[in-house]
Length: 139
Ligand code: AMP
Image (cartoon, rainbow, N blue to C red; front, top):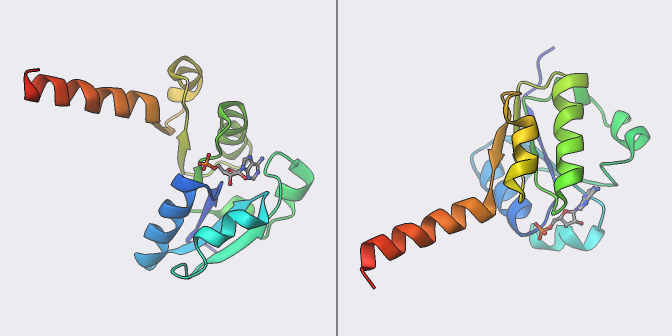
């Protein structure tokens, strides 16, 4: 049976907003974080489910129900190495069709760019926004 669940890994500033947005869109969202306090950011507005655990613990990860049948996984912990490791795992081992991952270091991101993974580069996006602002404002 095909599942429509989306897993968001990391319920920080970005992950909590993504989880709330997707859940408000009517999507079936599960958000995972290793720190229980992270879920305080979503309690009021979030309709999905939460999982408390360390995503780098493969034994824990493999015991998540229907893990290989996710529609999408959004990997947004603050750690590039963790995010790259998880992106590899979900792409190569579980063959999840849609993977979005946050990477700060553009050079590290290039390691997985060829795999059809959507990469969010916060530093690059902010820098591009700065350049656009400078160009517009003629300071
Ligand atoms: P932020 O830096 O505000 O976007 O927060 C990142 C979130 O990712 C925090 O809530 C962390 O607890 C969470 N996080 C970091 N590493 C892991 C991990 N290995 N497994 C699950 N959650 C994690």
